[in-house]
Amino acid sequence: MNMPMLLPHPHQHFLKGLLRAPFRCYHFIFHSSTHLGSGIPCAQPFNSLGLHCTKWMLLSNGLKRKLCVQTTLKDHTEGLSDKEQRFVDKLYSGLIQGQRACLAEAITLVESTQSRKKELAQVLLQKVLLYHREQEQSNRGKPLAFRVGLSGPPGAGKSTFIEYFGKMLTERGHKLSVLAVDPSSCTSGGSLLGDKTRMTELSRDMNAYIRPSPTRGTLGGVTRTTNEAILLCEGAGYDIILIETVGVGQSEFAVADMVDMFVLLLPPAGGDELQGIKRGIIEMADLVAVTKSDGDLIVPARRIQAEYVSALKLLRKRSQVWKPKVIRISARSGEGISEMWDKMKDFQNLMLASGELTAKRRKQQKVWMWNLIQESVLEHFRTHPTVREQIPLLEQKVLTGALSPGLAADFLLKAFKSGDY
Image (cartoon, rainbow, N blue to C red; front, side):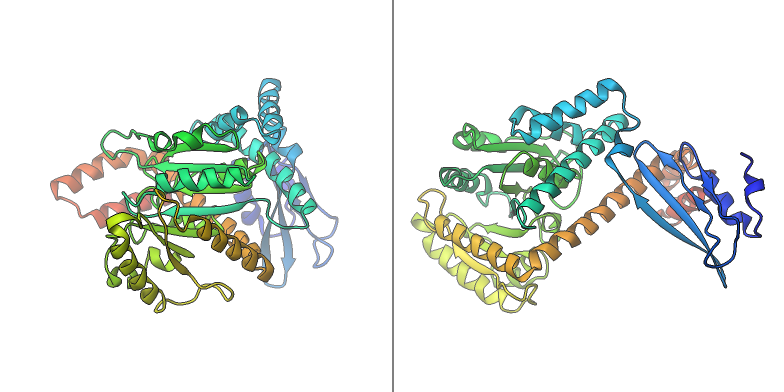
């Protein structure tokens, strides 16, 4: 059908812009009248990953665009071949049955950067998300799993703590998943993925699943797919999810935006009171644990505990029902770890009862959506044909000092804006 024939009203340039959007096909529905209240032309483009309905409503000051996005499982699976459909169904059925091999393969699929596999991963995630919602509804709306983020400087004893803590939880009947994030080399791009070697007992436990993943240059101490991996682990029946991040500094706390509770582990030589006062990672902590509190380190551990208790008093409250605590633990002797778990359960119960936990999770989904958008926009910018042609030339001018970095960035942004989409 010819597009101009369907545009009797004077605002053609608004709808013409719709034709440039990257959808596969369009179907236009128009009412007989274009008056306010009765005339709502609706353009409905469909693609294999969802249904996007763009409504144009005639108002006194012109046309106003409303974008509504409806996504159904049928739309997601529409563009899959039979082989791909069987592959996704196999992963999904094995995942919800708790098969570790299917969980591992599903996380590998989610971490893939290949475009088609990324589409398959989104189909799988949508199926798991629907299953997850059904399970939560049967649990009277309460979260199925407790998500805990563990962070701290290198050498704080994060892996050693998880080994002892994880064994304690599995002995008490919990199913534990550990997502250990290792830093990727800035030189070679590789990652050692060695955290699992320090959890020999826990890695043999059938009620525990340990998954090391590289950061691949992602800032904030987590990978870009950590959030999706959490959802897959919960779908596989794990009720406690531990995210061990890389050794982080004071400004890297992205893990706090994807967990229910953020636990900061500090060694006895973790800095003085001034380090605790500095706004940053300490401000995000719900629980601070001073590790290695045994032997000759008991005295310095007590001193650090007292200093951080004093420092936390100066920080603004983030919750109405919970005040951050500072405790001492030892993974070697087990001192304080059982009490630490009791405090973590108290946190979960208080946050659930007050409704803060539910609100926090909803906010985290929004934050993570924008994080992924920023990453995708940057990738789209780099691969844009006009920008890609200009990058080597402008980089060379910046290297020789002929052009300032700011001006080169402005040139690239202008090339991106003026490019033919």
